[in-house]
Image 1 (cartoon, helix red, strand yellow):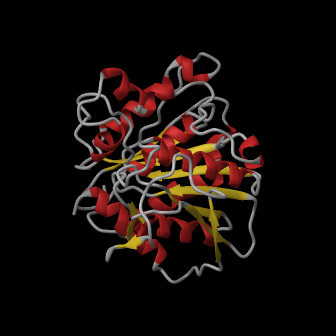
Image 2: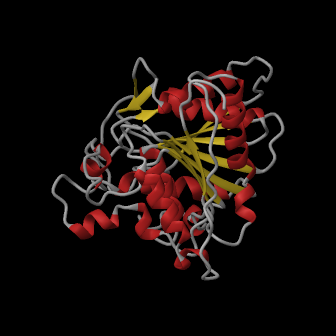
Image 3: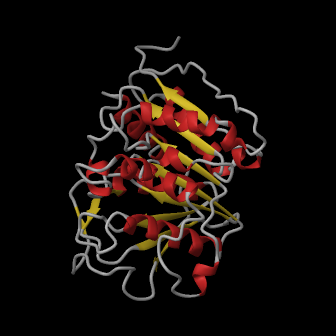
Length: 319
């Protein structure tokens, strides 16, 4: 079992514990009043694979998981899948259920996939994320981003590029700034620069033989600044899909004086984590604590862009 699967199983064990029951209701909100920017794309219904991954996205939307007693904090969730699919069952839905159990309103994003014939190309997912942030901003007092893998790349770009107009204004919703109060990037794809050009994310966004400036423009760390919200980073060290160096690159970018606002470097907290090989009680507590930090927006109160990095290590027993 690699550590990425370990994270999945730990989260699943948390949700299957039976002690908590979600009291959420669901609602679907279309992101765009008509045809999304640029047009194009597939026709017909969305496709859901046997393992719970979405593709063939004709109409991007938000699925709102609303708790019984909302506390005014919305979390926009973007699952991964290499921008070829959206891993709802593995990532987005478990996270949404966990959040609603604790009073947070989860907004699960079904975003357009750039390989499905969109005229907007690689900008289509970012357009959807920015539009979603604006819609959520009109409903919630606080907004956080939670992204996994390629969804972590999308969330990172949305967090760092709030000032970028990815599409022309359509209606009054677009008067709202697409800003987040915090971002949690879970084993994210960050850099599309060499040597990290082997991913589906790079092929679909930058292209297989992109120029250096294109690779840089699609790399999240390029856009980290003093206006970037606080970031919470989680990485499995044996991840063979999203190179762990991605998370370290993002952490280093957040520590630069230019990102801190005050000009002072920000310390990165690293603690040795005790983990067993399976999703036991200790692992469940650590995953729960990480998710609570995201949900509460604890880092959002800090003035600087300070990353908190949780590194998962597989052990044969507690130490």
